[in-house]
Amino acid sequence: DTAVSQTPKYLVTQMGNDKSIKCEQNLGHDTMYWYKQDSKKFLKIMFSYNNKELIINETVPNRFSPKSPDKAHLNLHINSLELGDSAVYFCASSQSYRYNIQYFGAGTRLSVL
Amino acid sequence: SQQGEEDPQALSIQEGENATMNCSYKTSINNLQWYRQNSGRGLVHLILIRSNEREKHSGRLRVTLDTSKKSSSLLITASRAADTASYFCATDAGGGSNYKLTFGKGTLLTVNP
Image (cartoon, rainbow over all chains, first blue to last red; front, side, top):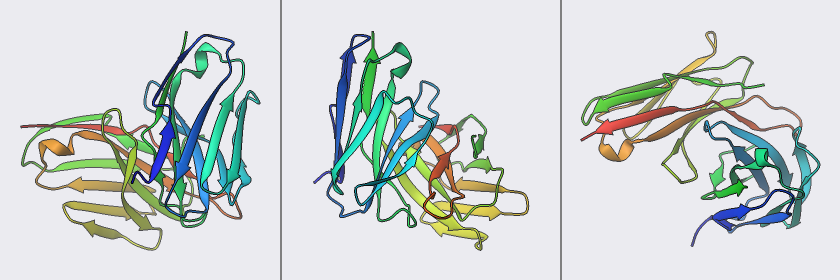
């Protein structure tokens, strides 16, 4: 019944590895987002997709590649992980990009060793 | 650049007291939203106030918006231990397809039983 679910909840990996985080929403929303929350709790948008199309791409290293196979799913693939990528990554969705009350997943805590 | 700035960074009160958190922002906005984040969880939307509104209520929450001062406040009345969380303001200043929320750094509220 979870509205926005993301997996895994925890991810511990070595520098240089490639990893993916998956996100699914069952709210019928058109727009999905990826956010990064750092250790000081600062939450910054990374990407936004509307109906599978990329509409927001903040200044994120191109090692981060989002993919939206359909409007209910938005995955995040990270290549060549670096220490600075350690953070909590949140997926969110909203009814549309204009009506943007957002529903968040529980987060994926990524630790790069 | 960061849009919202919450104040104070941390607030500790006794159960039953009122808690007031402030948010200042820099540019014109379409709306301002408040979210709550419990420790280790995702953000939960609390309330949205549009730029043409001055005050809004939802249960024990009262939000004000002063667009001339570019500031908002969130008042939680009769606080409970369960209100312990971080509270974030988020501003929507977008247009075109660039509608996105910009989050502040949050206020950590601790309600002591």
